[in-house]
Image (tube, rainbow, N blue to C red; front, side, top):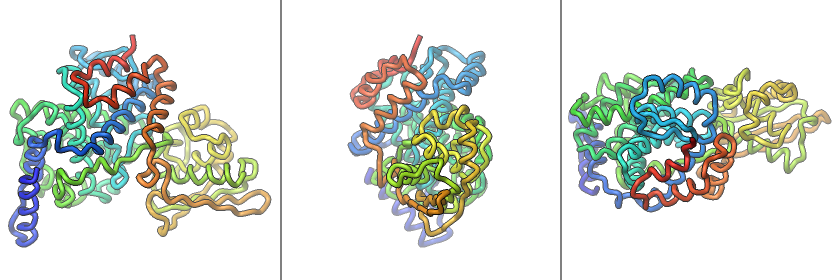
Length: 467
């Protein structure tokens, strides 16, 4: 690890000193780092964070197990699937590794309830966890290998996002899908014990399969992008294992991924501190099944309702003020439950009407509720650049003439106010109760907390498969 870091630092300094001296190519640096990495190199705190993330993924996928979008995707792929190699979480079907990776990633992302790397707004685990469990189930691999591979995959996925943010997302690329395929490729490469050069090629192959559009965020096409990221990452690793190659500068080259999708990659974000600073330490978990930018709005509304006594009948108008991203992403009309999940207006209405912001409150039934529609119409969104990203202020104008405000700087689930292990467990149990009541959720939770001790993950997968 020290040797790799020393090489990276030296090459960066050389590049900084002489503009005509290129650094070692990103794929090669990453291939060497991943191939040399040992499980003992991963700090215990990061191993624990990996378990939290993995548990959250199982919860979100279980919650969505009966969703029509998941059933439809299975119907499409089942007719073309190969041997039944891997479990579909919360379902009786078993599909081939590639199809199972796709379906489980899609289902983990359906409810907008997955984890979030806040600097980039990448949801890192949905594209990376499913292919690892599918491959490990097929090949009888250990839980420790999954954890190690997962940590490395998320590391590249999020560092890549750091290196091209915010312009990449601003240009319309759905960063969870576009960076997620790299995470899935790196993680799968490690799980398959690929050599450094093979891993480098898998990264380049992943670069040619990176896609996903922000324009599709309120549609099912968004979930397909996440499913493709998982499946295509496995394909990249398997093809590299068989000798397929890719351009050494597929990421940062003049005609490579970064420039093609928006801007030159900041190389330092990709390589400095590898093995010392871990992006998984910046992961956060959602207490509400909606867009992360809406969470401080929900918290502020709860404060106004529970501590200030405001009810829906008291409201004449509501102004939600936040950073520009809040208006850009969440100031939208609501026609469907997918719209509602990224709507400030809908979240405000559900909190003041029902004192809740859970799965039921974002269902089609609630979206069409006339009382909800009425409150939504009273909400407007304004921009205040002084409010930091991740914050919001909610101001209620009452029918009695009062003006009452509440501002939240750090929402529940953020790094400053993280969800506890117990809260994540409760979330998983609630999701299982919603979408997969027959799940042996207690054994699932225990199995994930002890994943590093499992010689074979198939016992864990038995907890989430139903006949």
